[in-house]
Image (cartoon, rainbow, N blue to C red; front, side):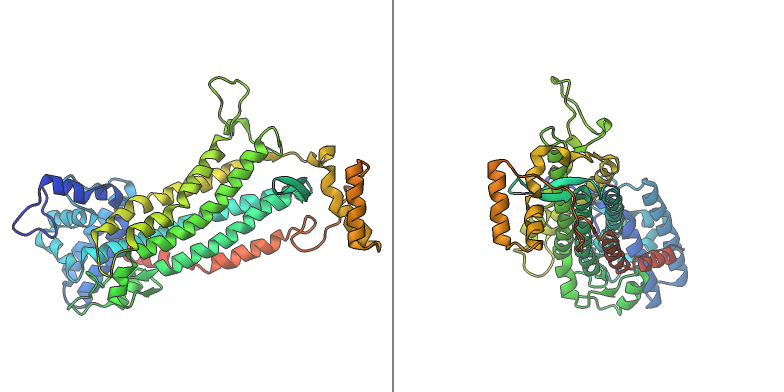
Length: 445
């Protein structure tokens, strides 16, 4: 069995080993490349304060780059008996470089090591998330423009209410994603701060240069107070989980609409048959299983902030092993949300709509408000016009006029898609992802 980083003159029992390590080996594979990047920045700083020689730094950096390449190739593994990713990296270094490999832990604890790993992991996954959101946004905007003249009924209380359009429907979800992206940006800004150098939560007697590691890793700033840096464990994940849940909420609502509108009773949209599944007994079925699964997965993701909160919200300041369990619900959630976003985009791109839906006379009553407004514009008091049209509907004599003339901002006749696209662009420009990319390229150069 490999030696633990914390091991002294005794070993834990196999039962305690199994229970305390839990799923950490599996979860830490998410963090492996980021553990290497954090170590590269840390040892570069250690050399600058005299705790490593130039030659030691050169050899350690080269071996860390080799380990990073293994991570990128999917060939990095955490061996049986090795506790976590930090132990595995240190073990690989000591096998290659001897005692020199043990020097990388000076001025550092596994507490701030996992903190920086998580921050680096999260900001990378948020970069991917932003790309997926923008891709879906673009697909929704394209559909909105394509079908801006295609009318559909709008609903209140699941009763037909007023004329809407497929342009409005697709465009509404595009604009929803801009608000969701503001949550993502707030989570990103809170994440992109450097906890490295806080050690176990109380700093170090070594003269660590935390400004240097902040710069090397491309963080916007550091978590200044070392106690607060440790308090960020769990809080960071919860804040990010709220942002992810906001995106998932938009997807869940869109998926519900798509399932409803695809049913024969509505028939508003058509999903390509290759995007549906069948029944083992009913040969006519073309089920929208993908949207049903997106809805379920998105609803599950909306519970993530509560899961994180319930694990960490009754802990005092300082580190506790409880926080390890957050990894199990939090790290895989990025893959699940990415899958939902990508599948939603895939089907939205292929979805067709009934462009002559409102030719059906059953929808004629939704044009009643248009008639009331027309009469009011001609001088009839609104309440009198309302009563007149209402009585015509009750008597079955109402004749719908289906020529609409909406010109106000955000309406059927003026979707404001260009304005929504500009709003999205402004939010995207506020991330400054290029700083991260440049910093990491410089580390790995």
